[in-house]
Image (cartoon, rainbow, N blue to C red; front, side, top):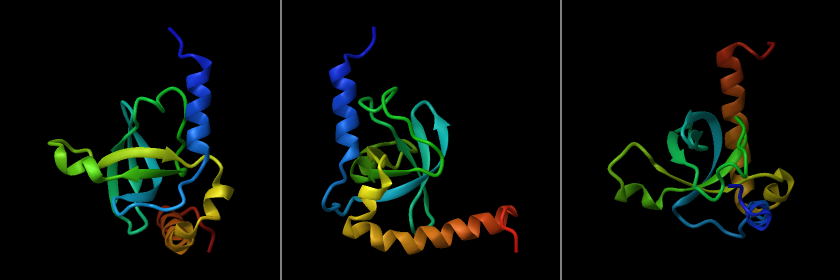
Length: 127
């Protein structure tokens, strides 16, 4: 049975607004690839790769593409006895609104440096 349209719209609206501040356990991460079964491999600005889970409210409602950004929470990772390092709290859909937030300005130089290193490593950049 399909989800009611009001639930889909509420989830889409919730994910479109960026939070004003981030807690200590939250971080913006870039999606590296889909690991399957609603699991995603994400990269932090420090270069560390984590495995995070997509919560059920976003499944089949909000789609995440490689290279897109997500807000993750690593608070519950200590309670688990598996490979997961956290949960996806929010999906960055309108990047322009998110870039206006003060915490994004700290991330921008780090991600641009990582993206340049990845392009050079794979041979996609013309030098």
